[in-house]
Image (tube, rainbow, N blue to C red):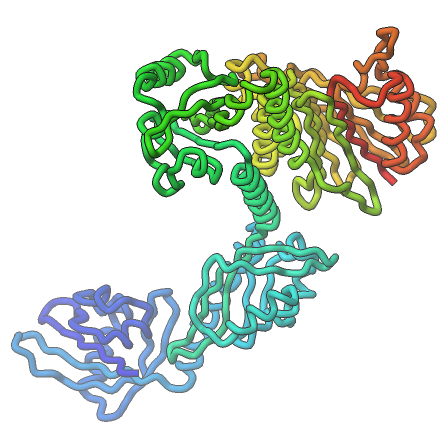
Length: 618
């Protein structure tokens, strides 16, 4: 270390520090510029300053001297001194500070102490955050792990420290990460698949920084992992849902054209390409009225769109009508058109379902129009039924603690019945059943919209009452303008405490059959039907679900099914069937309920959808 101080002794004034090397300033605990023109008494007492001058003039060999560092701690060093010739009348001396082993040891101890304090502060902050903070040595073995690792992976910090990071990754992720083991550059938002202590997969978002010494040698890694398992699950579910919707659109026998509120085409499926002769690349972004609407009716089309955007009223929306369309080659042809508006983020989009009825018009010369109309209507209903059934859960969820399953028995008309169950996170199971009023494609599409919103918002809202409130606000404008409403019942089962929280939006109350009980109890809570009022507060209640308890949710298609005498099946008959078969498997209970319903009604088909959801704790 080249530690040098130049001290100036002006006549009749206190000595001052004229210059200091960076090494000398660092040794004394200062920045070099902070020492310039400071009195020497900053580093030693007044008497010591004079003694230093006298010793420097007379000493021929290094002599000991004690400075006072910035932290007011004494620092004893060996000094070599010599007088300097300057261009000022004030005499000056140059002090070369030598640091013996003892001093080096003390200085290193001070640095080690400061480093220890820094590490202690890091670990204190690590324990206060909910994220998993960690340190690894250059070989990838954990040196430190915050307590959050137990919440994320199920392991205690003591079980993690000393283990290699690959030990906790899934087999597939281990292969990928092993290829990156030799790199020494920072990484950000890296997706890792860990294996939880109980065996399930945990997805984290990982950031890591390498720490190097002054010679560029890697000392260790420091990083953080965030648990994004639930986020990844819902993102994947949303992508899968969008893919299913896209599959339906692309394979539809109708030309499906979607337009924004400025009249520009935003989507154009394969059947639209065949129908109109324009490819999707050519059509998207074009003004729809100029592309496929014949000139005589373009003004009427624009007026209708403008009227709807200003008043919410348009005679040709949500209706199935015959119109004339324009092909790419300029020929006009008859179509059957249904247009439905959808409000997303404050802006409308319009989905048009278009069928070329040229052949049908020709066939009407030979066969009765009623038969053709019936065939088309049946085909439209099949599409809507396919949309409805494709979005329902594909299989029951069965665990050692419980089984949840359901079914939807379609009627001869398409309705808006809907049920779903899914893991809200790794601690809760969410269940929902809903019924959109009416029997047409419109209610089926509202069911699709409701499901998409619930799946997307469930992870953010948390509790059943809050989710129903958000659903009501999301759908209110569409429901109000379309003159529809929705009843719904939302439940959330806590896997650890077996507590069932629920809220009701005007739906039929579920039946709860307690183990070894003689009768069912109704679960109900205050809450208005969705779509009636913009803001609704839904009451939320909680019950404990014990072993052997059975919960049945249903739509009014069950209770309002009637026999030839006009009597309704009612919830009490459903409760009797549930009580008689409560010990059976969930599927056996549902089968018994349907058999009893068919026997009561004396028929195999019904005028309304019948949807059932059954939860049983083992």
